[in-house]
Image 1: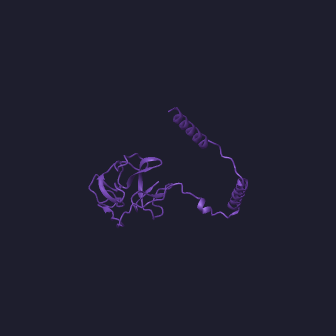
Image 2: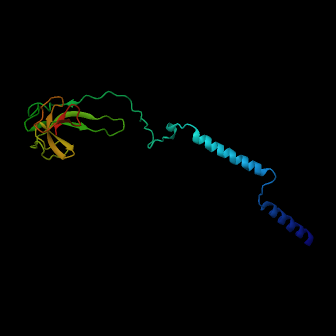
Image 3: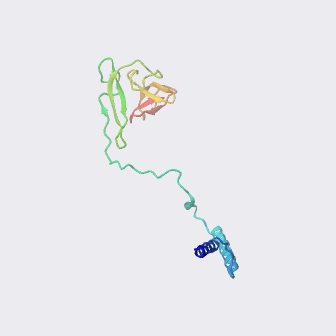
Length: 182
């Protein structure tokens, strides 16, 4: 038994030495290494000297926009229950004023809705504070949110020169075709 165990240990030992040895270049390997180095240097030189397509190097900072695929739909006409430009009460009952409004969409393919309706008239005029929901302003004024805050501004016709008091400019508000003096 001893002999067979010794042979097994010797066989395992030789296999470990054979597997764990180092690699050394043989005859002709130096020429192969020199040729590989020359080929690598040639490839670097060719890449450096080749004209570059700079468009291929440009990467988008953001992913491309993907249209959600909303169907083309005609824009609904504004719901005008009264005329915001008419003299107070603008076609509304006494104590009311005609105010333009916008209803913002709730879904990705929904559209804004626009109009003008009769609401209880406030007393706010140019620059007076309002609640942002359209109440608090007198007839002929509209509540807007601007860089100066939430305030009543005089209604104006965008295309009409001189429709605002001196020092103010008629600027579009969120309701198409309606302007406010800012």
